[in-house]
Length: 277
Image 1 (cartoon, helix red, strand yellow):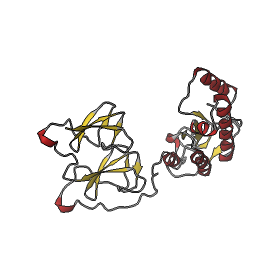
Image 2: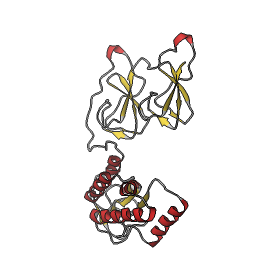
Image 3: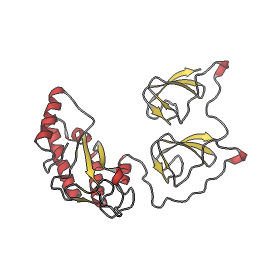
Image 4: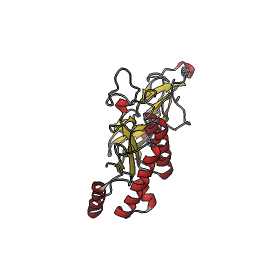
C-alpha cells in the first residue's frame, strides 16, 4: 500500500477495514514509504509506527501480532519524487524491522542496485554513491542469510582425504549459490539451504550449509532384511508434499515442499518417518 506519514492513507485504511470484515489476514500488509514527502530512514520508521497503530485499531490485533503482519517496501537511492534514501537509511529501517519482528523487508529494486555511470536513468541505477548490490545486502540480512562480501575472501579447497573424489564442483568463494546448490569442500559434499556467497561450507557460521557427508560414499544405508526402499533422497532435488524417499534404511514422506533438508525427525519437521524399508 502507499505510505504516508500516518502509515497509510484513506484507501489503505479502507483496505484494512474490508480485510477485517471478511476475515482476511494476509502474511503482511506492506507500505511503500516514499514518493510522499519522506526524508530518510527516520521518516520511514515513523510511518511504520503509524501503520502499526492502524493495524491494531483496524484489524483488532495486539501489538506483537500487528508487528508480525507489517511489511516495509522501500526505495533505494533516488525516488520519482527526488527523495534520497541511502545505505544508512536502509540500516535504520532494518534495525527497526528486526527489533520489532516485522514480517517483510524489501525494496524497489534490485535491477537498479548499482551506481549510475553515463546514464542517470532511475530505472537502471540508484543515483547515489554505492557499490553493486549494497542495498540487496540489507534484504539478505533480514532473510537470515550471509550477505556477499566485497571483495570475497579467498579460500583454498582441500582435496578429499584418502584419494577419494567428489562429484560436485568445488566450492568457490566468488560464486553466488542459490538454495539447493551442491558443492564439495574439504572432502565432503554440501548443500546450500538458501542464497549464499563467500561463506565457506561448515556446520557453523550462519547455518546456510548442510553437510551431506564424505565424498565417495553415501549417507543412505541398505534396508534391513533385504527389503526394498523407494528412491534415495537427493539434496539437490526439490520435493513436493507427499513425495516419498528412502534415507538411512527408512522410508520418509514430505509434508510440504522441501529441498536440501535431509530426512529426520527433527529439523523443520517436514519429514515423516514411515519406518524401516
